[in-house]
Image (cartoon, rainbow, N blue to C red):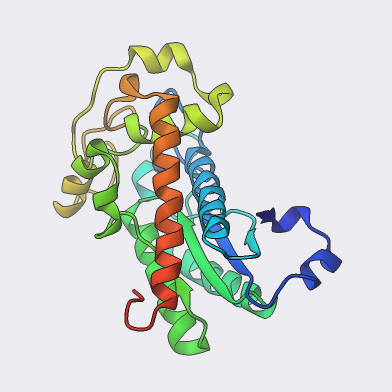
Length: 253
Ligand SMILES: [Zn+2]
């Protein structure tokens, strides 16, 4: 597994024709009082790395991880200091340009490792994937973890919809970047069982409206690095399985 940005152009030229590129997609967005704004970038990078490792273990020779997206649409968190939010149409345009650029660079397969679940954001990614395919003939694999079958493989808290800066995400940051977790704040946080996914279905537009006045949902105090490592492995397996399915005629998304 290699990070594209750490390679030289000559090393990229030397990659095989079958090279897979994974594009991690996060956000810069409020994640409770205990996690950094870059939480979704940290998760997306871990998902991409684990996906690359799983693909290499199943026989893919060269797997490259592209530089992550830090900027996207984050309307639910827009009321919290430090959150950066682009309009969904901008995100779609950037995604289309990014995947066309990766395609021109010669990568055989492009797959998204997305960790930011704001509905406007995921919709903008689906739209970008559609435009890349229909207008440019570039196929991009996008396992959307908010949808079946992928969501079913994740933790109970994730499936409950109380899944922003709660046990699920906090565990991953504890595994990846424990130095960035405000541990004394985390351990003292009350559970917030409000379901974001249900609030989204009801038409709510912000974390405040959805019942998350401190920008977290779920149970941060229940998080652990061990759970984070397990979830990262599952996210990596989702990336690998989605790519294999996309390559199998009749089984792609
Ligand atoms: Zn998040």
